[in-house]
Image (cartoon, rainbow, N blue to C red; front, side, top):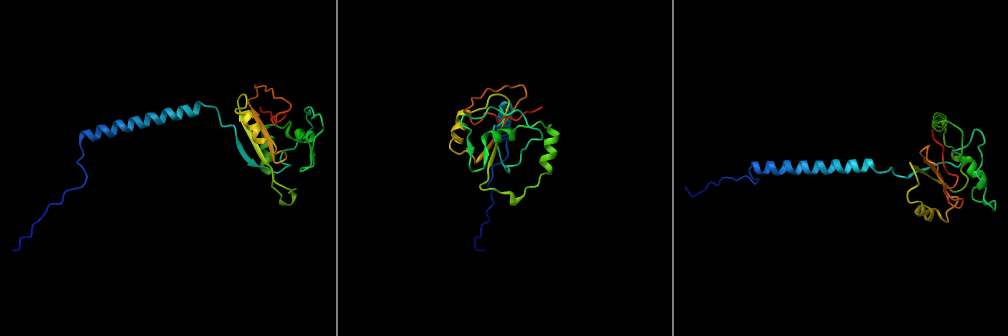
Amino acid sequence: MGGIEKHAVQPFSKPFTIHNLVYYAISFVFGLSIGILISLQLKSSSPRPLIVFQASPNFVSSTSPPVPPPSPSNGTFNSSTGISLKEEYQSVMHNMSDQELLLRASSRVPRLQESRGHPKIAFMFLTGGPLPLAPLWENFFEGHQGFYTIYVHSHPHYNQTVPQTSVFYGRRIPSQ
């Protein structure tokens, strides 16, 4: 009959050998150990200093007037918000506990008709000590007064000393 030859089909993959098993096991252990080391390194580093969220201008108000920080020498008035810097600093400080703050923030419903011009961005810096990259943040905020609000939430035992000319002056939120 016509010379039809049957060819055996060879599988394309290589057969599984002990050498492959050892190679894959070593690669897996090496990758796992690198992943664990990176994870431990990231956990031991300081927390990220920036959380950005948008808040209404009246979001933080005080239940009792706190001791105001020293006012600027020229009594600067922010024409875009209609609030003097002294009043703006006072609105950041409060004497509420964390539980009271949580209840107040969770029960607050934003009202669209309260909008007075452009929206502001709130920056919250969470830090255990001095603010990382503070000079870089100073340059970032320079020339954009009235478009942002800054809050610094640091460890209760950390006493920060910030110059009066800094954008971080008087922006610390007390914690328990």
